[in-house]
Length: 335
Image (cartoon, rainbow, N blue to C red):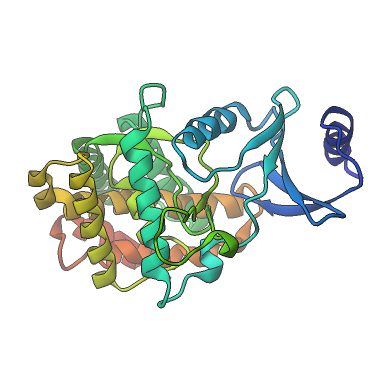
């Protein structure tokens, strides 16, 4: 048995007082964290999170989880914690991701639930203690596209002209992001981090509806109001027709105006904010997928790169200022 898992089992037994459980891998993610499901003879389950302290800190997860739970969001309750060892014992939100169940007949309802949860987050979360989604972070994220996808994955050395094209586009995207009202940004609000529990789904949008369960929120920041919306409805793992995406985006804009998060005049700029925010996120995501393969030995994300960059190519008719970027993508990275 690996030493790390043995330590986790000892902590669960000795410090948490648990016994007669079966420990099996539940999932991993695009980081060094690992999750295990504890199953008991009575059918109950818990989740144990293992975050090696030399690679990941549990503290942001614990802090944000308690903050989000206080807002009424459905996040895993923390039952026990050991920050020094990097262990958490959590409520189990199940093993059914939104991605597992989304289809054309239920997407409006399930996205509706997720968007109302997002409005709650953005309207009520105190952002004063959150890191800023500032120019430096936005640029650092987009550099992942240049460094990991183009250079390391595809072996491309850009010309001076193409490098300048990227720099100009990056600056445009930073300006777009910083123009937007600032709210709490989950930063990975998509179908693999939203959990569906059919036993908690009344299907009618009533007050008892607590889908989705929300995971992977530990990197939350204070940033642009459209970022999490992009993550959800321009998802790197599942895509929908452009007209549906635009309709959802503008519906969300109306919700934000009703909630006081936006002014009525912001509606004129909202779709541009949303689309260009998507370009920033998808450049970052494509770079991360390449890095996961090269650095971390996780090639499974490579298949999502064409969809991710396809969102950018889709904007070509409406955003001529993206022509240079789209040419680079279509020449080097469209497949």
